[in-house]
Every structure is written in structure tokens, then in C-alpha cells.
Image 1 (cartoon, one colour):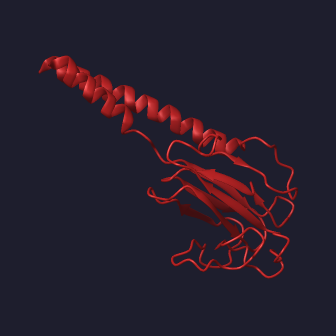
Image 2: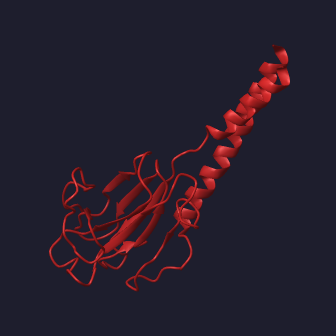
Length: 186
């Protein structure tokens, strides 16, 4: 009986430790370019996409397509709440119950995102919890040639994903050990 109880607690402990990742996105390039770096972000429900203004004046608005450069018609869209400059940080929390799929974002400053071309626009791919459409959760890859970025997850995204995985494993091991000790004592 003790062994069964301990095993149940062990597996429950492992399953309960999925942590949210903070996925970094730079707003504006280091030389004043009108870009998002990366322009394609992969997140899991519960993650936060963290935008940091690097250069220029920019805003972030959710859109219904990559090339529309128009505010989404959906209620309660994601928006940075205005035009900001270098040093601003804004987090776009992905709801834990978010459905898998794509949404888009763009800079609403006139001339930064031209309809039909995309311009300063990006794609957010929401994968199922624990699955980011075949890529690592917290992964990010470019979608256009506006920035010199590797075709693999960015350093920040890869780090946040790796940290989340190690923290989850460590927390699961600690909780499981505590449960095993409690079951032994009982």
C-alpha cells in the first residue's frame, strides 16, 4: 500500500511541474531597423512573450494576418498600450487555456508596417502545452529576411526553454523525493 501511494505521489509530482517560459523578442534593431527579432515566435500556453524596445519608437498590436497591418477584430486583443521608446518592456501572456494556432503582431507606427508587405510584423505560433509544433517550447525563428538571424532558436529563447526544462526536472525530483520519504514514514 505504501509503495502504491508513493508511486502515485511520484508521478503526480512530476506532472505538476510545467513552468512558463519568458520568450524574449527585441523591438527595433541595434542599428535603428524596424524589425522584431525574432519575427517568428513559438510559445506554449502559459508562456510570456516579453518584448523589449531596443531602438526607435514602436508599438505592438495583435493582427488577424501577417500582411494586413491592421488591428485585430477579436475582442480583448493584445496591445502594448501605446508607442514606446528604448528601454520599455512589455509581456504578452499566453493564456493557459489558449488553443493551438497562429496569431500575428505588428508595429502600429505609420510607415513601419505596410499592408501587403508585412514590414514590421511577426507571427506567434501557440503550440499545445509541452508541444510547440515540432520545435522546442520557447523557440523562435525568423520568418523574413529583414534581420540577420540564425534559422535555429535564438539564444534567449533556447535558454528560457532549457532553464524551464531543468527547473521542472529538479522540482519534480525534489517533490518526488519528499513524497517517497513521507510514504516511507507513514
